Amino acid sequence: MSDERDVAGDLATDGGTATDADPVGIETAAIRLPAFRLSSEEIADAWGTSHAPGVERKAVAGADEDALTMAVAAAERVLAGGDEGAAEATTTVVDPGRIDLVVTATTTPPMEEGEFTPRLVRALGLPTDVATATVRGSTAAGGEALARGLEAARSGTTLVVVSDSPAGDPAETDHPMGAGAAAFVLSADPAVEVGEPAWHVEEYPGIRHRERGAETVDTLDITTYQRTAIRESITAATEALADDGGPLEASGLEAVDAAAVHQPNGSLPYRATGDLPLDPGTVQAGTVADRIGDAGAATVPIGLLAAVAAEAGEADDDPSDEGGPEDRRSVATFFGGGTAVSMACQGTLSVDGIDELGGGEPITYDDYLRKRGTIVDGAVAGGGAHVSLPNWQGSLDQRYRLVAGRCPECGGVTFPPTGACRECHERVTFEEFEAPRTGTVRAVTVIGQGGAPPEFTGHQQRDGAYGVAIVDLGEGDDEITLPGQLTDADPTAVEVGETVVATVRRIYEQEGVPRYGVKFVPTDAESTDAE
Image (cartoon, rainbow, N blue to C red; front, side, top):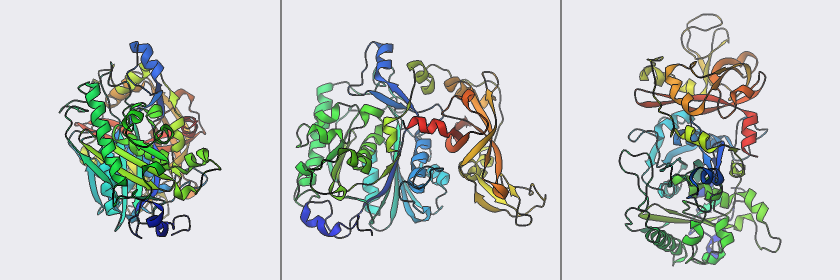
């Protein structure tokens, strides 16, 4: 353990979060936000008002994004130590073979019944014997997933990914609804130590719910009842951190520097913490709903990473403050209608993707409705190209991770690695390898209305014309060339020679099952998102 992390010995006496000499917590972390942003001004212009108090703008998932694609993107970042193509890793690189448990949390899985976590595991190329768990059902799911992951981290390494993209009635409850994902690697070698979670459980019917078969979140709209329930639950769980035996027993809540609490909008966190000794600046440090909206189960996890981010600590440094980054104390409190869970943290770390909180491409409200699928029918005419589920499943390594094959006879590269070698035409057992995810556009075209295969019609209705490029990946003998859709960019602006990066997105739906695979994002679009 490095000197920067070797603070366990002092925690018992300085009011930290550990109760023994074997702390657990966050080893490394990352967030991923969609590229697009919708301002509350756009919503107010459309409806005459905005029912999103304290939200200046919100993150908007693209037509080909959902909770799974954002989860994959966040998890890829946290394992790789940043985005591929960067000059160097910005955070710790994690060997996928270290992961013993994968826990995911979401309230918006792509299918109401169907596996979520195994798809993430396959997309990441994790071992097939890794243990998995999926937490769903409420906005407290992120806290429950972290609590489960922290317990397992005492004897192994856990990957926790929280991703969400809730929706509501366009006239009101949808106004604050955003999207985003956060990924954590938890272990007994933490940069940020996390104490034992504190819980408060009480039934509060109707606070936030989604009826069976419904796609939109609803509430009973009893404002006083809701605020009281949220405030009482958050107060009870957070105060328990400072009780006898709690992780903040010695220091008390007064020592907390940043607090990320349940934030369905940008103003409620300040009301919800009114009975706690937390000043507005402390709450602001963990509030992200003002910039990304209500990202469901992912909002507080993203807020927690904003609170512990070393980048944020550097910006807020006061020369008169005592202690260094390792002394920074943060609290995260999750609420989900009947459950509140609170955690105390100590320390800071570099969070990849944290700059996306201030980035994004502005879109109009009409664009937003199309991306949401609100003003399109999604009907598909014609049969399209049928690819059976078994055949699709057999090509997942290529569709997710660009796995190619090298011929052991001639050294030629074949993609996908099936059949005969494309160089020597011998039928061989290929030596598989993953192609780089950064490549160069060699040809590009735009598929306009009426030109897309029927299975892509629904996507085209929501996102308009899309680009298709021929992309070279790798160099020399390892180079592969393949076609792929472009995303998160104006397809008419992409040029030959431009650099693109692979990302997993929704391709289309067939036989009632969403199908996913690689698309390409121009690097210029990615840098614009973070500005």
